[in-house]
Image (cartoon, rainbow, N blue to C red; front, side):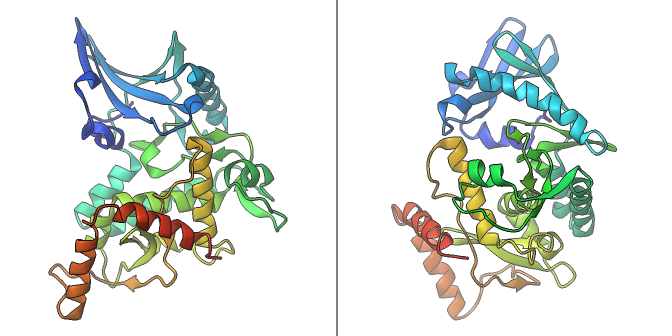
Length: 335
């Protein structure tokens, strides 16, 4: 299902324990994704196994309460095939005993491809890849509607008496570049857990994709920022600002839906999954800056002292938790 150093594996390699890897005869398994913060009914874990020289991916329910959710994932995958068929392939699994079995895909994700282009200073190709992603999203079945079920169940908005929005007619909340694997002309969608049969605003998918990549690819983005490829500092988390290329952010600005509202929807989604209010998602910058370069050396003059102070503050015990609390307070006061 996933390349040997995919996003999924990198996210958990740093936290492996002796129990993550075991070998019995001709079978070896390694846990590559766990989600203990989720509500018990959504909790799963994913394993890459090697059986007689063949790799395979298994997804298990981590609790008894999550078994119905595991079966629901397979149903959602099959439903997504028809909806996505003209633009994407879907990796579908088979329920076998107490787990879902998937084919192992030896390919890079779209996000990894974009990161590789940025690492090689090919920002123009990276932007073209992102534009292809946007075009594919816009080619899916869409509907102009007030997405009441999404706003009520996922976004946790009490008042949604408003104008209609451009929506994907089927809500695939995780259809982001890290969950799309590239095999030549084939774009293969994995991780269909959060798929719903009600409309979801298209801009929310784009927002999630851009915010996700700005957080995970920040060094590469800054390295490629220049006059021909400016970046906008839209996102803030605790004491850090995250920039994204204007070539990407143009798709989510001036849409009639504020970025703060989109991020509050993300807070709602996280609460839907975990049952708790998160202090880790940050806020939207009130006055975002457009940058055309980032200095390699330390900023001289007074700004150097500001930079040093921020670095010192990051080391103060409890400062990250407090900053996360402040982020959330600011976000909910933004329009």
